[in-house]
Length: 314
Image (cartoon, rainbow, N blue to C red):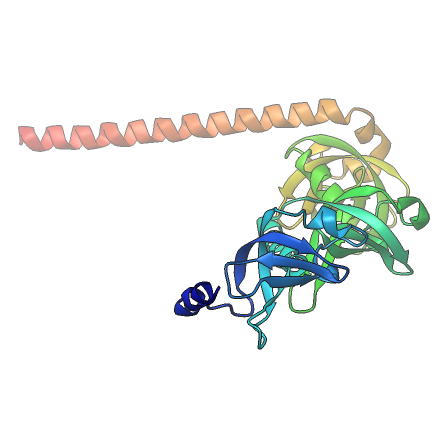
């Protein structure tokens, strides 16, 4: 036995706080588990540090004979024993995963476990996350969400303050925006009118119809033309998925400047046909411009050729 202890003493075992070590579960006690990590004394895992999740038995978290990774949370005592943790190692890895998901803009699953006045609390990648009420699709009956698993994306992730805030509405909005196509005709409902434009709900996505994009004629007041709750057909003018912004246009549907001001109903009644005609006219215009540019280039080339030929003759 003395020879074995001398052999151990010849090795310089460096076990530092924050270090990850591999060890084999050797014994269970009422207070935790002993782990063989190859040192002079086995490491010890208190029961509270055996698992990230509450309510899991020690034998299930740390089966005897199982080789696992552990985080050193307290350095060697006078007997050479270090305190280990599986829970804090899981937290460390979970934060690494969360930060990577956040940076990559990935969608995550959060299981709702509790609620408060401000929203709901849940588990995401083993950590505590929060979804504000304003970022939930269901904002009235929060009790019905407990036990459910929701898809969401991150609003804020802060390791220093242990803060993880997510949004279900932002994810739904991003999914809806991805379905919109520039130049497409969509149905919408006016939800807000401002002096500079009209906000229109497009089945979960709010787009802006700027006053300059309403008509080819000057508009004095949008409130005299539109009302909240009014259904409209609008054309997607621009989609910015990065900023979650959608710009709309209706003046492309007019047969003449100011038509939408004089008779909005007529313009809306055959909006699809009007859009197709407008796009066809734009295509023809582009083709005519391309042909004119080609002709001008050919004429210029001909003039250069004639000038070179004349120079050779002279």
